[in-house]
Image (cartoon, rainbow, N blue to C red; front, side, top):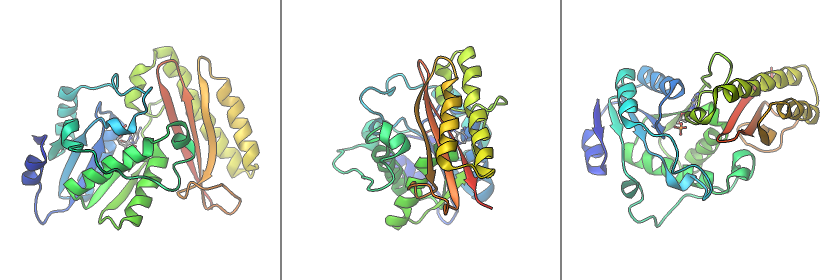
Length: 276
Ligand code: AMP
């Protein structure tokens, strides 16, 4: 595995006439990231991973400075997973003059976009830069961040970006807790409590399948999440997927998404319900 940090090095290290699978991350790798690499490995000749904690997707009072980082460990995991090229730039490389940024018109006013203003403009900005640099055949994103995937798909369509976006399933702990770099902020007790989030989502999906009204599903899910100690609900939402518009009886796919704030970590999780 080759490690590069500048644009010039990256351009030299990219192959010609080979399919490139790309896995963008913010590092502190776990099995969720690794599952994206596995998919990329299976479907492409060459696999590129980026590790970059992108400052423009963090709000002023968020955890940019204390976001967990461990490059040595990440490097080892990436190598073992079969990454061919690891791109590890510094901020000045990704934002040489910061004159232009991508802004989203639809779908960023709900869910995490409502709680984190500007977050998805930052995400789309960095994803756009990385796509231009890496020029991947396929790019791999986890449904853990379902809103992010939907917005990236929309961006790729609107801007005619020649890349195939691959959605990958959420990887969980045995308890059901979705793997996340931010889980290190949780105590063992909180981890146990946080595993209730997925159980509540799964139960909500079952009631949806059984034909319960959307508002009632949301209400019951809220009640259940409110029972989790030492935490506070940020949002509980049910939206059409992947449009992120209002959910209705006619929606083919529904996204049930929640964000729950623990003392030191804000956790997100979701389930997607497909009709039929
Ligand atoms: P991050 O490093 O948190 O920005 O995540 C990088 C990529 O890994 C994103 O596409 C995430 O959706 C994906 N990812 C993070 N956690 C998981 C998980 N538990 N299962 C599947 N994909 C994940």
